[in-house]
Image (cartoon, rainbow, N blue to C red; front, side, top):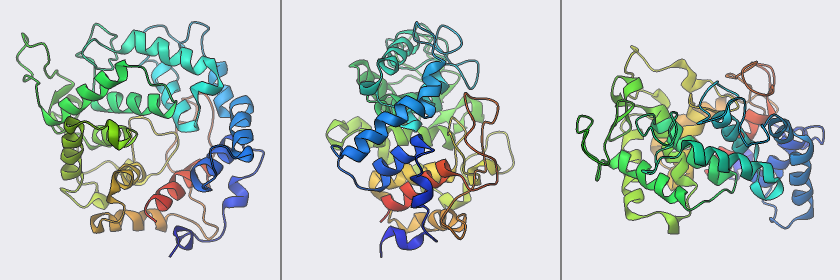
Length: 339
C-alpha cells in the first residue's frame, strides 16, 4: 500500500498552487520525487527564494548579518538570528541561492559558537548558556541551509558527548575543560529548565539534527548518542508523550498540537519525523503516534494549524484551526518517510 493511500482526498493541487511559492517548492522537493536537476524543481526553488517567505525573512536581516539585535542572537524571541535561521531552514532556504543566507550563518557562527562546540545564547565566551534545544536546532538549521563550516563537526561532537556523558565532567567540577552546566546539566538530555530531568523537547531537536548527517559522517560517538536517544524515546509509548515533566503533573498539551514553524516547543509530528529518518518508521512502538497523525487530517487530506507564533515572528503562516499547507506538508512528509 502506498503512503498516499492513507491520505484522504488529494491535497496536491492545493499544495502546488503558484500563489504559495514556498509551499509549492517544498511539495515538489519533499513529496514528488523529482530529480534535483528537474527544471520545474529548479524554477520553483528560485521562485521561493525571490518571492516567498524566504525572501520576506531575508529582507529583515541587518546588512552585517544579524536579525534585530547584534550578538549571539537568542533574543528577542522569535525574530532574532537564532529563530530567523531556524525558520529559514524549515522554509527550505539554501545558501547557494542567496549570499545573505551564508552571511547570516557566518555571523551567527562567529558570535554564538564556543571553542568547545556549544551554540551559546550568551556568545562564544559563555559555554554555560547552552541547552539541547538550541544546540539541536542550530545544527539542524545549518545543514538544512547547506551551510557546512568545519566548526560544525565540533558542534556535533559536543552534542553527542552531552547525550552520552563521555568525556564530560559533572556539573560541579568547575576545573574541568569539558563539563556540564546549569542548563545542559547531564547526560540523557538532562536540562535545568526541566528540573534537571531528561527533556524530550530538547531530545527531539538533538535527534533530528543527527538525522541530517549522512551515515558516513556519523562517528561511533554519534551512533552511541543516537542509540541513547532511541532508548529514551521508546522508554514510553511516544503517543503518550509521557516523558519526564520537571515542573508539571502531566505532559504539555502542545505535544498534540501540530504547528509551523517549530522552534523549541515541539510536537509528536517532529518526534515521528526524527524517528522515521533514523529508520524506525515501521517500528510497532510508533504505531499509535502515526495513528494520531492520520486522525488529524480532514476529508481532503489536509491538516489544521493547531500551534503557531502569530504576531511573534516575521510573518503569518495561516489561521489556527484551519487547514494549513505548512502543517500538511509536515504530515505528508512523515507519512512518505514511513512508506
